[in-house]
Amino acid sequence: MQAVPLAILEKGRGTQLSVVGTRTIHLCSDCDADTLRRYHANRPNPLMPDDIPTAGL
Ligand SMILES: [Zn+2]
Image 1 (cartoon, rainbow, N blue to C red):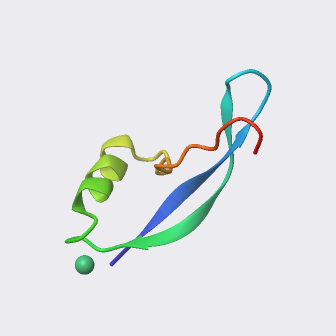
Image 2: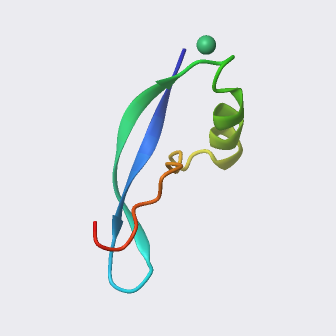
């Protein structure tokens, strides 16, 4: 398992999403290999969640 910071996004005005914080999640290096690869490719940025908050949230 690897501890990975996951971005907490908040929808601002318009369509812009801003990172308002991070929370630590744990990913399995086997089951979540694709997600881990995505994270390591974008380090030191936090991992972006798959479910981007939509308008109204
Ligand atoms: Zn696993």
